[in-house]
Length: 168
Image (cartoon, rainbow, N blue to C red; front, side):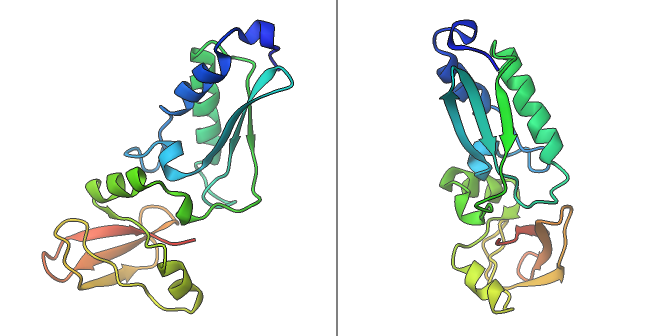
């Protein structure tokens, strides 16, 4: 791990700026900060430590995100910074920022509803509005979309298919 003298002045700010640019490989419209998986960028024991929490423990993008984070830190002059993954507390869709939710909608993905998590626990499907036209009547076509964290829906108004980021 880098010491404060090898990391240099402004190391924490450079690390934070570098992490703010790292995009999620499965949803490139969002940064890892907007998705809420970037938990912390800190200076500890004279070095930089970045803490990530994947959307779920089996997420296949976890290794790619770690590599992208390490690469971004190296480009910022912090090749010895540590990137660590923590699973507890578990990530939740409540950690997606408002900007992230807006960007999901713009990308044609219905963002998770915060109250929908309770419905999911009861085995109920939440009411999902179409991200294309805003129509409230939609139907689930498949429990899984392009990734395990999304479901496939279709709007009954505009008839366009779309993905819904499932609540966790």
